[in-house]
Length: 345
Image 1 (cartoon, rainbow, N blue to C red):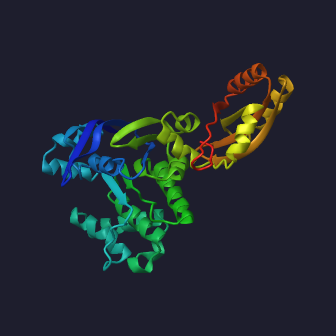
Image 2 (cartoon, rainbow, N blue to C red):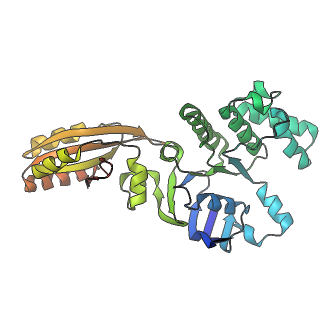
Image 3 (cartoon, rainbow, N blue to C red):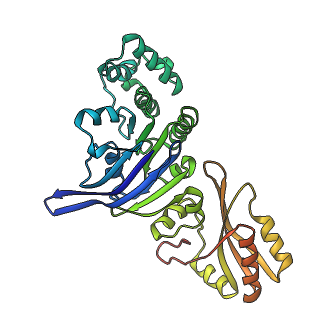
């Protein structure tokens, strides 16, 4: 559905050239929710604005439904953009217009009849759950309600692609959850492909099928959300994943435990807490597993958990136990001790 190939973008500033994107390529499949995550300055905002050519890349191709937008005339580009909806962190609502008019005015500019405009507005306000607010003004709405209006406005053009530019960053946790549920509903019921950018790992875990991690204008890691969570490769990706799991174990304790065995992080999927596997290794091998810390979170379609465990025993037996755990589809990784923040990473 979306194919970015070799995208680069440079901005000129007083201090010189700023390389926002460096040869970025990624592919978003039809009907999926694809997330791009990165810290501030990673280049993700520039990337998503290149998808509908709000920013024109210096080089590379931007294809949506196999059409390279960079090669279209102004008129053809305007037509192609009608198939790409976009929602923003700041909502971008007209303060002096009602909810109804905020959605209706852009539709009127496309030449739709008054009756068709009315049908579209009512349809998508109903989808976002704001039918009773059509005569209200933005100042009378909560942040979550404003974002729902913005989503309804984007959907009213009936696009096949929806771009989300940090759409939940200005919202409180409960409202964020509600908006994420709405995006899941839109994706499932309307079949709209969603590409979103965020700096919040909980957004990725809740709704994304696949994820790309960006840093300094480059994609440093990409894959299925499940795979990236299970086995992050890059240190930045590990920071994002570890932000969901707080293993606040004192360094001194970890040092002592490592002297009498092996401290490991176990990652697993599914409804099991992982304890049956630990119980089995205590029976199969001459070791004593001890759970130091644990947590379970929810991905889009299944649970993901992490346990910090101490495996006490002979090194040979520990190696056999670790191999057994891997055969049970448990990802096992050694633990590094961070003296700076007293957290396991």
